[in-house]
Amino acid sequence: MRSPIVLALLLAGAVLLAGLGAFRIIKDPRRVSTGFILLAAIALLALWALLAVHDWDPTLALEIALAHVILLPPLSLLAAGIGLVANGVVLTRREGLRIATAVAPVAGIGLLVLPLLAYRIMDPGPETSIWQEAVVVAFLLLGLLLLVQLLAFTGYAVLYARLPRQSGTDAVVVLGCGLAGGRVTPLLASRLDRAIEVYRDEVAAGADPLLVTSGGQGPGETVAEADAMADYLEAAGLPAARIVRENRSRNTRENLRFTAALLRERGCAPEDVRMTVVTSDFHVMRTAALTRRLDLDAQVTGARTARYFVPAAFLREFIAMLSTHRRANLVVAGVLVALIAAATVYSYLPVGLVDSD
Image 1 (cartoon, rainbow, N blue to C red):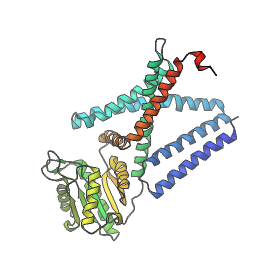
Image 2: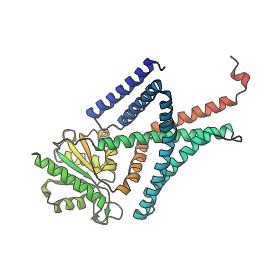
Image 3: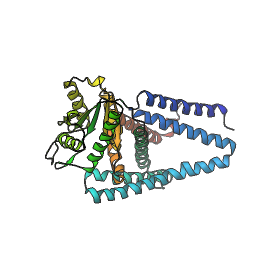
Image 4: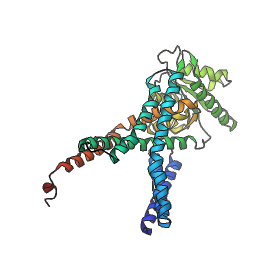
């Protein structure tokens, strides 16, 4: 019989972590780390449920563990890997072969390799050396580390995108994402259409927000993104007097920084202005985290993206988040590799030396 104290501690831990996650969402939902807290709460709750079922019916618990712990993860990884490779093929046909379109198939191959590495650890073979086994373990643990971060980031990004938008904004900021020469692309048009919805909702509620189009002129573009975006909004019937053009930025951080500076020039202190930033749904979480780091009072809302584009887009955002937190990731990866190396060296020590105490 499982100790009631153990079950109580697991349940209490899950409830506390879930409560902490909910508190952080209410206070400021833009922290990506909240995703890890919620994922930990789910993991503890699942473990508590499995152990509780084991005390009631060990056979049923074994069947659940076999299905959800032993079979489901590798099968899910294989299915996700095949899906990402297939998505990469579709994306390449539609968008052409580029680094951006290669992200999905590369990630898919990585997911396909993880179960194979796990199998290699469980059945290493008679000729496998301890160092070869250590390398396989290192790759497996690093892959699992990335997978956990991907689950936390993606899961919380989806949750954040579904949080209700609060009314009462002072500025609706639309982020650019490239033009086709001087034309607005379908991806950018979806952002602008979403910005129009937000603006009209605010006007209907009695507000009179500014509309900021943000984006400079990139390679192959004949005009600045901000100008093409402003023209699109004016053609849709929005008042030109309320549209502000920020036409210098080259990336998301500059979009936000230069917009804040532009508002300051117009006599609006960014810390006193409530912004609603409009971008694509896959870009919402990273943009929200950036607004927090830049001390902007902002909420971020996303426009829908074509389904075939979503997996690769989310993966690119995840890679960008890894780059933002690269120091912490390098430290964790270094500790894992060091522990594996130490365990491997320890296994080579003479028995008498190891047991000398």
